[in-house]
Image 1 (cartoon, rainbow, N blue to C red):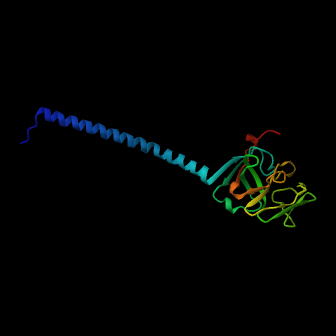
Image 2 (image 1 turned 90 degrees about the vertical axis):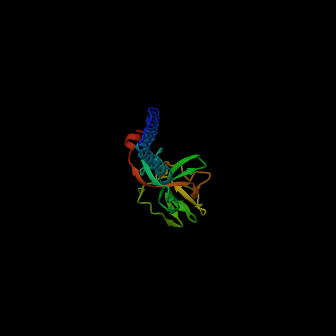
Image 3 (image 1 turned 135 degrees about the vertical axis):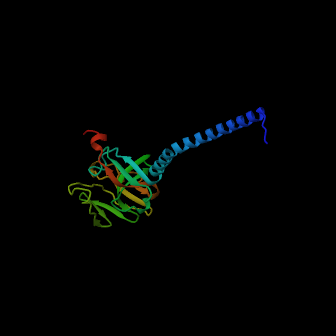
Length: 196
């Protein structure tokens, strides 16, 4: 027969009570972590998406009009910047201007770009820009540019009012400076753009 004294019974009850408090405290902490874990996962996922996969930009100037207007939002991919090609709209870091810019690639490494009668000539051939420019738009410049390997030559679509590679001291953008290639445009200019 097991006989427990009152003191032993109280000690056992007290120890069980302390154990129960620890268990409840641990369960409470686990419950809190379970509650916030989905939100932490979402926040980390958004951070990875916005810093490693996509780039969201708001167009600050009229240099890409009419394709992109002041206040439009562009969404580009950071993951495929080495797959650039002529005609792509890119976001890049301009060392000369010290800011991110958004322009269209006109020439890639090895290309020669000339201007004649308001038109762009690429490697001696008239560049077909009908997908993004009206035929009345003039592109004027007195220089000839030969694009070094590993760089691109860019211009804004608003050729008559774009401060772009034609006028820069360093007209060629190193491909390592490309931060994204824009694929989606959200026309938010009526709300975010300046009234003109």
